[in-house]
Amino acid sequence: MSESDVWARIGQLLEFPVDFPIKVMGRRSDDFAQTIAALVSARVPGFDPATIELRASSRGAWLSITLMVRAHSREQLQTLYGELSAHPMVRIVL
Image (cartoon, rainbow, N blue to C red; front, side):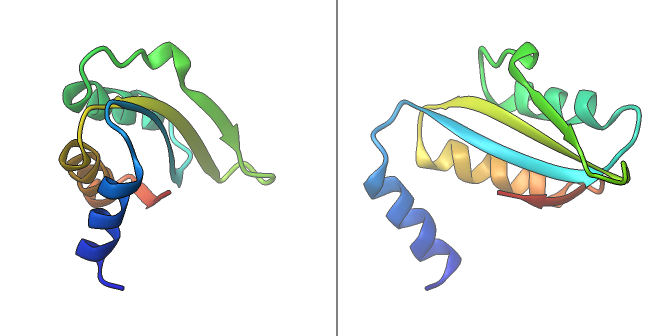
């Protein structure tokens, strides 16, 4: 299944607007959470950075950020995933 097929399927399965969890992982740094929050805030009106959940890896080298976003369309989610995935501080987006 291609990436465009996956996004088309997501658009069929979800009823927008929808509260959608996104997990972002990257190397632990002082500004990782703030950088990701700023990126998400630019794409998701009304996003509240106070709702971010943080979890460090067992050895402390990696940081996992869980965000709950109110997505209004498949295109908005796809753009957000693309921008997060392309960010140099981000290792993976789920």
